[in-house]
Image (cartoon, rainbow, N blue to C red; front, top):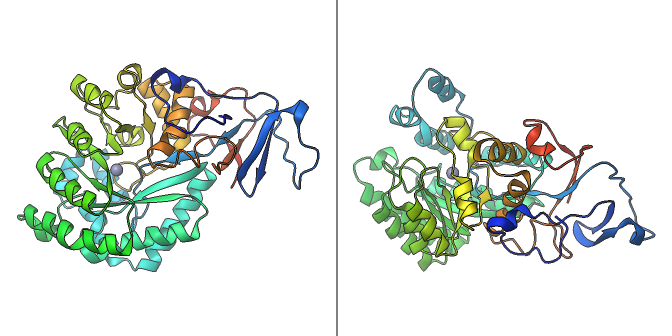
Length: 393
Ligand SMILES: [Zn+2]
């Protein structure tokens, strides 16, 4: 993906075009792309030379939807699901998001940070070069702020570009079980002003879904978010098609994420908007629900973004190469479309398309040097394999 004009989201058939050079050199200075070209024009002297013969040099993956900050995994629920319980049944039996919230509230901020930093390092080694991280396992003012401060500290201590999203409306906490309006008021009147004052979030999110937050609830929260300058990136149409996509578009959402349940009306609405559709196939794979209809979306001329949804309940992997494999095998995307969706389109989904997501002069995308490969298709083809030889930042 070496192209100096690659600074915008790729739509429809453009997603299949991956600008590339064979037998080429690439010059980096402190991670910034300074030049590239065919070997006949290679620069004479540099401090370090890395031989990439027989390998691919790619921009790092951009993962625009994760819940990377959490206390511990939920392997116990995994066993329940294997025994036949559904995601909804586990949530009803005090598992699910509320289980993560209980664990997170008990964990000190430092321990939470250490665990998140270790996960971030692992993802870096798997080729992720920029990431979005959500709150939403706090569900009290103090714990949501704690999560967002952990994300801020990750921003400060990691070389990776990170965007932070406030997801207070992830689930209804126990103490508001019979008072959803009360909890929404807490989000709007107490959490949001504090988060805005401390500058702790770049975006706002809502789990807009049957049994969680309705379209009307989402309207209230997103309207309040905009008052503090927070653009929406929201969870919609995961289990039901109840108008979430249109709600996001109405509030000028940067992205609408999940989209496992989509109709023609949703595709038409996206076509008439600037909102980007985001697919999270790791979640479909792990909890065994339908996949986002990528072909219908791309063939309609729309852009599509791929992200991991890394979280302890429904997608405990942030491996973007595996996400690409699922996109190809389950969603019928081509390897080129999957790479576009996982790099430049992911960058657009967190407003970083001018600084990352492609190998372009002046960008600092993070560079993946792959192990020996004959074709780009080997990334999704050898699913579960580790394709990364080295990552440069
Ligand atoms: Zn999510």
